[in-house]
Image 1 (cartoon, rainbow, N blue to C red):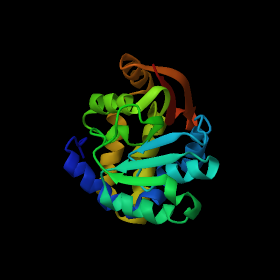
Image 2 (cartoon, rainbow, N blue to C red; image 1 turned 60 degrees about the horizontal axis):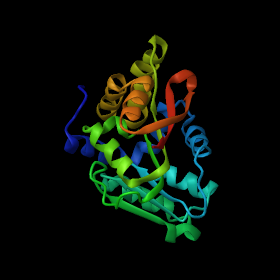
Image 3 (cartoon, rainbow, N blue to C red; image 1 turned 180 degrees about the vertical axis):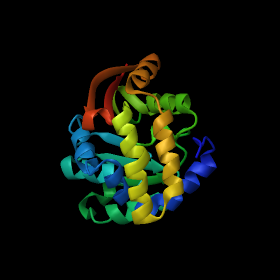
Image 4 (cartoon, rainbow, N blue to C red; image 1 turned 120 degrees about the vertical axis):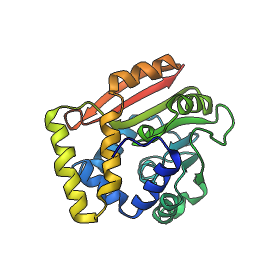
Amino acid sequence: MKYIHNEKKIKNIFDKLAPYYDNNNKIISLGFDKFIKKDIIKYLNITCNSEVLDLCTGTGDIIEYILKMHNPKKIVGVDFSSSMLKLANKKLRNLNKFSSKIKLIKANVCFLPFKNETFDCVIISFGFRNIKNKIRIIKEIKRVLKSGGEFIHLDFGKTNIFIDFIFEFVVKYFLKFFYKLNSPYKYLLSSKKQFYKPSKLISIFKSKGFILEKRIDYLFGIISMQKYIKE
C-alpha cells in the first residue's frame, strides 16, 4: 500500500482502527508503548497553572497519563477521528476528579481553533507522520504555544535491516492474525518507512523557530522522542 496523502482516506483508516488501536499499539511498540509515553511526560514541566495541548490525541492515553502524574490547569485533546474521540471520552470518564480540566475537540490539527500563545506544553505522539501538510502544523504548534513553551514529538525513529524485518513481517502478520486488519496497518508500516529520520525532523523544527532541548531514543532507536522549546 502506498503512503496515503489524502486526509479523508487517512481519517477513514483511523476511524476503522479505533476499536483496536490501543491493543495494536502494544504489538507495534513490542509492549513498550505505555512505558515510553509515561516516560516522555516526565520531561515536561507541568504545574497547576499549565495549559496542555495533546494533538492527534487518539484514544486519550497521553491525557490519561498526564493527569495521573500531574495536575494541570487545563488539558485539551484534538483529533479528526470521531471514533477515536468517542473512545477517549469513555476512557477519560473514569478520571472524574479531573473532568473539569479535560476538553476533547474534533478538529484538523493544521487549523487549530485556539488563540495565539494559549498553551504551555504541546505534545504530538505518533501523529505528525500522518499529516499531509507538515509545515502547516509546525506553524500552528508554534502559534498556539507560549514563548518559551515546551513541545514534545514522539514517533518512529531510525531504521535498519533488523527493525525493518520486525515491522515488515513479524508485526504485520501478528496484527493480521489477531485483528484481521492487515490493510490499514500496511498503510501505517508504509508511513513509517517514508517518515523523516529524527535528525531531519530536528533540522526542520529548528528552521521553524524551535530549540532542541533533549532527544531520547527508545528500543535501539525504533522510537524517538524530541523535546523542543519555542524561541
